[in-house]
Length: 81
Image 1 (cartoon, rainbow, N blue to C red):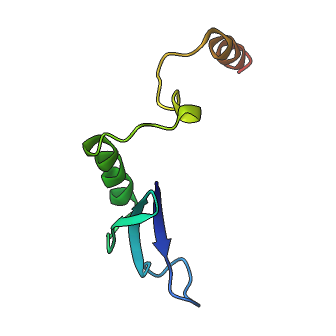
Image 2 (cartoon, rainbow, N blue to C red):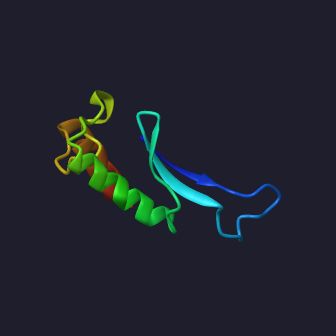
């Protein structure tokens, strides 16, 4: 899964991209989107709509509950400020 941005050769980052799109499992599913932010939102919607399985190594990426080890580190960082 990826969001891609294609820039015209020789143009700076100030210019709008030539194309923004989404690729899932090597297949371009959407293209000619206007914003990277909307492409990211659409990618999340596609993941939900297509019921795609989240990769095992990233299964806790969006989890709000911290493990005890992470919570301890977080507490130490907060107390040092």
